[in-house]
Length: 248
Length: 259
Ligand SMILES: Nc1ncnc2c1ncn2[C@@H]1O[C@H](COP(=O)(O)OP(=O)(O)OP(=O)(O)O)[C@@H](O)[C@H]1O
Ligand SMILES: [Mg+2]
Image (tube, rainbow over all chains, first blue to last red; front, side, top):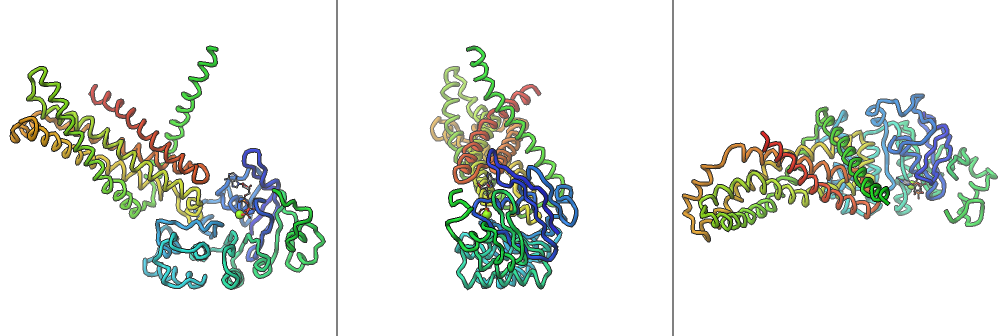
C-alpha cells in the first residue's frame, strides 16, 4: 500500500504539488488524470525518490520511503517513463532485460534474452526488434519497449507514465489489456497516468484527479461518471469551458 | 568603489572555490563507490576502448608533430652555444616530462571530457539516469566509476606511447634535417634519459586522465535541461578539464622538482 500525506513540491517559485493526499491499496490499479503540467509525473518521481519532495510523508506498506533500504525498495518497482528513457547505447533486448543482466536478479544471458523476447511479444513487438537500437524504433515502439522493460522483472508495483500516448487505437487496446492483466493475474499494484479516457475506463479500479497541486477528486469509474464535480466533468468530456483554465 | 571592485574579484573566486568543493565531493563519492561492489566490468572495457584505444591517433599525431617541432627549437637554441649535441636528450626530456603528458592530456580533454559530458548529460535530460535508478543501478557506479578508472589507467599508457612517438618525431627531424647520425641520436637520447623523467610523465598522465573523466562525469551529471543544458555542460567540461590539467601540471611539476 502506498500512502501519501500532504506531499509538497515546488521548483523555485513555481508550486507544483501543494498538498497531495492519496492512498493506493495493494493490488489495486489507480489511474491519475489531470491537466498537462499539473505535476502527475513529478508525483510518481517523488514516490520513487527521483525527486525529493519539499514536505509531506510518503510511505510504502507503512514504512517511510526516505528511511527504507534503497535497493530493496527499488527492487519492488517498475517504471515506464513518459519519454521511454531507453538506454540508447544498448540494443532493445538488453534494455528490456537490464535488470536480469546485473545485480541481484542476474541470470544467464540466454535466459535473460528469452525473457526479454517474451516480454516484447506481450507489448506487440516481434523478436526481430530485439537486436535493434532504440534510435531505430518509432516513438510508439520505444514506448512499448519501455513498457516491456518496466514489467520484465515482474515487480510488485508498477508505474506507467502515459503508456498509450503515441500508439494507434488497436495497440493502445493491447496495452490497456496488458496492464489490466498484470494487475489481475500478477496481483501487482499499478499507478497509471493517462489522458486517454478509453484507457482510464479499461485500466482503473480507482481514479484520482490532480488539479492545482491537490487531489481534486477520487473515486471509482462508476462514481466518476456520476459525480457532479465540475472539474471532473470538464476533464472527462474534454470541454474547453469550465473551472479548469485552458491557459496554464 | 573599492568594495565593488573587491566584490567583483571575490565573486568569481568564491564561485571557483565552490566548484572545486563540489568537484571534490563528487570525486570522493566516486572513489567510495569504486571500493564497493558491484563493479561493471563491461562498462569498464567499453570505456577503455573509447578513452584509450580511440584516442591513440589523436595523441600519437600530437606527439609526432610536437617532438619534431621541439627538436627544431632546441637546435635553434643550442646552436647559439655551439651545444647542438644536446638536441636528442633535451628533446626527449622535454617530451616525456612535460609536453607529452600536457599536450596528450589536453587532447584527451578535448576528445573525452566533451564526449563523456555530452553522453551523460543527454542521459540526464532524457531521464535515462532516472531510469537507471529505478532499475536498481547506481549511476555513480555504472557511469562514473568505469570511466574514471579507465581514464586513469589508459591515459598514462597513451602518454607512454606518445613519448615514444614524440622522440621518433625528434629523431626524424634530427636525422633528416639537422644532419644527426641516426645511431648517435638514439644513443644520446637513451644515455641521458632517467627513469624518473618517464615515470613522472606517466604519473602526470594518470592525474590528467582522472581529471578528464571527473570533469566530464561531473558536468554531465549536473547538466541543465534540454539541448542547451547539454551544450553548456559539454563546453564547461572541456574548459574546466583543460584549466585543471594545466594547474595540476604546475603543481605536480613543483612536487617532482622538489623531490
Ligand atoms: N526538474 C524540474 N525542474 C523544474 N521544473 C520542473 C521539473 N520537473 C517538472 N517541472 C515542472 O513541474 C510541472 C509539472 O510537471 P510534470 O511533468 O509533472 O507534469 P505532468 O502533469 O506530468 O504533465 P504532462 O501531462 O504534460 O506530462 C511543470 O510545470 C514542469 O515545468
Ligand atoms: Mg507527465
